[in-house]
Amino acid sequence: MAGTWTTPRTWVDGETPTGAQFNTQLRDQLNYLKSDPVFDGNVVVSGTLTANVANVGGNATVSANLQVNGSGGVNGSLSVLGQTQLGDALADSVNIVGLIVGAPLRNYTETRAAAVVASGGFSCDCNQGTYFTGTVVEATTVVIQNPPAPGRVLGITIIFIGNGNVYPVYWQAPVRWPGGVAPVMTGVSGKRDIVTLLTEDGGATWYGVIVGQGY
Image (tube, rainbow, N blue to C red; front, side, top):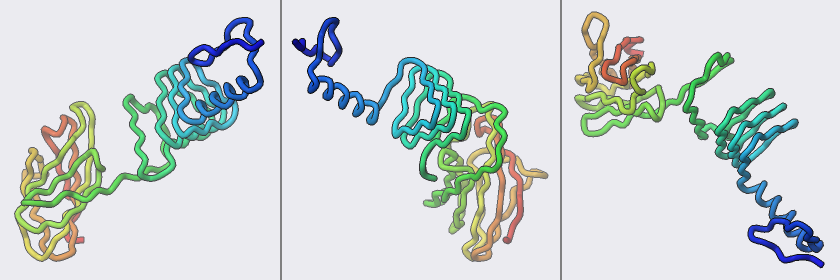
């Protein structure tokens, strides 16, 4: 005779579940695996692992391909012997807290972001990208937000677009220019000036390079 279910549904030694109880247990387990599986130990997959949400408490080893369409968290080590796809759209974000060492790149792209131009400010947020464009419409102060921590190096590119007048451009953070002279931006409407800035001390100092003007 079938025993009484405990909470949560686990088998009791000597209990014989009915067919309905077994089917319910199987259904609930499949729903659990489909919705939000959490693995406390190691996960070994011989084929392709596809998950809408992946959260692995231990180590994960995938012998073939790994695809995570939602958010993926591996607290231990992740080893993938085949291809790896993180995210399924260009807008997805992949945050890597640690270091990537010895990764050979075939190609990569950088995110282009529009500088926020308002009230004499020309704001570039490094959390949004590394390539910024904006039209200079008045005397402007360039503000660079969220630079990396000291010890990390970041280079950004800024394209200033003229609107028909020459306006002074100021820099909130100290920028060192070749020869100590900051560039005068082109005022011709639609023309572009390209500047690259590099920092290695958390944004306390930026090294400016004039790539070209009047494009």
